[in-house]
Image (cartoon, rainbow, N blue to C red; front, side, top):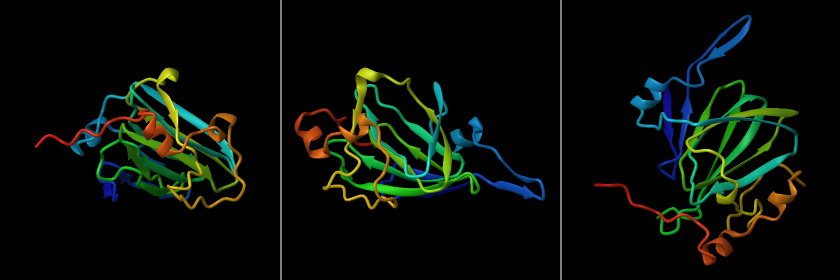
Length: 189
């Protein structure tokens, strides 16, 4: 498996091998020992699947204090996937990375706890799966506004379809002032 670090360090792009023949393709989306060997969490408590049509934008979601790590991949279709560092005090606070995930290439992105996550659908439709390290906790749920001017994310779609909740997200600055974000903890030496 290829592992590509991103400029945010803790966010990783994973490329499991895809085996193709005239019938289609096969790939392994999860193998505990292989991910453990890479130093990634292997304890996931919840698997989710999201189906969306072209133009749908979901996010930017995070949980605090019950933070979630997510291993995200497209099962079908193509999405523009975003991870934003929302850990107050982090050297990369407010920075984001974008990864294109496709059911054809099998790429995955590891988004650790303390990062907001979102994606938009660029194909006709998309089926996205993600494994979570902690359970969904509505009382811990937070949402950074998808079009926060300070983030300036260049979403590849115009006039996205967003939920009422996502349309009501707050700017990262507003969440920081309200101390509604996780605190950065430097890695142990």
